Image (cartoon, rainbow, N blue to C red):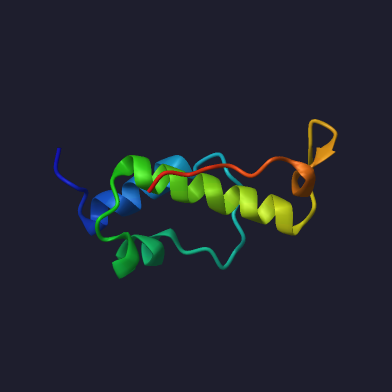
Length: 79
């Protein structure tokens, strides 16, 4: 399967983030055009969005199932 184009990455990110509240300064088009995402597959983009959401929750010390995320075991992400 070929890697998505810039337009494809933007569409994938929009689909992934459709139910996710985003800060006003988040620009999915800009992320899609960033050279660091050039070789990302759809699964890589989904992992990027998931890790960004977790980082945001940790930064704001949001609790998940009654346990602060800062006390949750770290996730292992394969590259």
